[in-house]
Image (cartoon, rainbow, N blue to C red):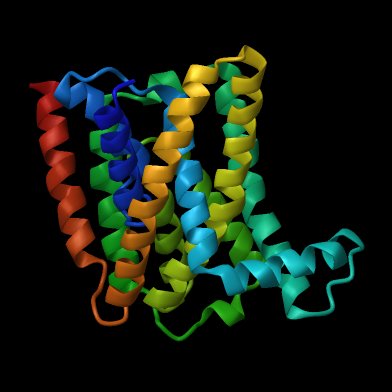
Length: 267
């Protein structure tokens, strides 16, 4: 694949992964609206892995805490905050892994990659984000994360397997609905992305190695590097902006894009 095409895919992914506007939806729309070759699921996941490194770097102290809690979690010694964070992250990942495997094994994933589906999910879940952001309390912080909340947010996160939903958007919506402050809701959503993206990246790696498609692996590595840089900038910008701005600008963007895509799909 041409270097410019890889760069375009990576930048779109990097800039939209942590904003509640659906990175996967934008990646699917790229070939549909521009006529460019579809980059395929392999490169889609590769750029997601690039953003994984960005979120790990940005939240490195929280990630270090979760990693430190894994040995105790494996021994079921949940006696400190590190083990508790690791447990909550594990619980929140279970629903999306189960549903993701079902969709992959049934081959239903391709049926969801349509302009109409993305248009409806952009619109509907944009309005859900607005409703939860406006109605949700702001009294809870990330330190209040409970197992019940982790499971609820995990169930909401599983909806992001439908393109256009936005993984960050739907988990932020869940957190705001549960009463978490905007900045803390975004932080939990970003931390939840780590095991989710890691799981999908591992599945892809097995497929690529098994097929011995080294040209694709090279393109994936280049795209992941570009996505890492773009994602780190976007993440830093959003987390700083959320201290003073609501999610309404993202909602407006989602609604407008959703309406345009629906017109495009049904015209």
